[in-house]
Amino acid sequence: MTHADIEALVKQFLVDTATQGTPNPRVQQVVVRLTTDLFKAIEDLDLSQTEVWKGVEYLAEAGATHELGLLAAGLGLERFLDIRADEAEARAGLTGGTPRTIEGPLYVAGAPESTGYARLDDGSEAGQGEVLFMQGTVYGADGQPLPGAKVEVWHANLLGNYSFFDKSQSDFNMRSTIVTDLKGRYQFRSNVPMGYGCPPQGTTQRMLDLLARHGRRPAHIHFFVSAPGHRKLTTQINIDGDEYLWDDFAFASRDGLVPAVRRIDDPEQLDKLQLDNPFASIDFDFRLLPDVADAPAAEVERIRAAA
Ligand code: MBD
Ligand code: FE
Image (cartoon, rainbow, N blue to C red; front, side):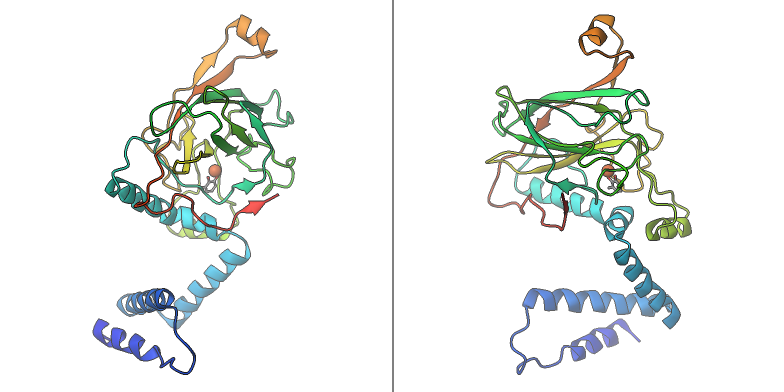
């Protein structure tokens, strides 16, 4: 079939709904567009019926095994949406904020909340990795420190696994909500995380294998930073030096999100913190953009786990 034939065919499939009520115009627009584009792809690539059903079954399996969020990251869909969000902000004249990067599929709502400081790890991996202190200031649209801003932070353990999804970890291990203090500052103690790898037997990795791609992420730490009157920031920082730093299967590494890692071995400081070994320290400030009417909502609605 020609593309024109396909367009005509899809229009035919839009049966008269006069007796069924009014279609949702947005849903109708999206369904028509996506089916038209899918049919054209099937025609152009001359997909067999078997191939089409394999694709349907693949998506069904990815859904049933809760890997659609992971697949979206690996296909670059989540990164693509971020590029569009950056473009929309630039059009609205919003510049100068901390770069955004993808949320990923592993956030869990309801983490314990504290002001100024939190320890994220439950101590079960003590002595195995490297202790990390990360700290900084949240700045508002006027360039001044923002007290009372919410810094939600989550990251993987030393095996690259996330609590809640990894039931061997304690509840909310490596997850916290820190409210900035009167000077707009936050600080947390944790362990330097390890990079994540897609489940080796999972649906996402199966596709990546067929594309000769790995399913690894560089070590990273996720953040939501929010405050009244400001756009919610979704971002991550990467741990410098990771072998996958610029080879992330989810395409989320960005300039400006790779802070220096200082190694602290000063005996006086170790003593004060009751640490036996040198530790890593990262300074990182967040700069929020003002809430404006003419930019798409910074709060993305998406089903998230809650505990
Ligand atoms: C992660 O930890 C992650 O951040 C993303 C985007 C995908 C899979 C695992
Ligand atoms: Fe992650």
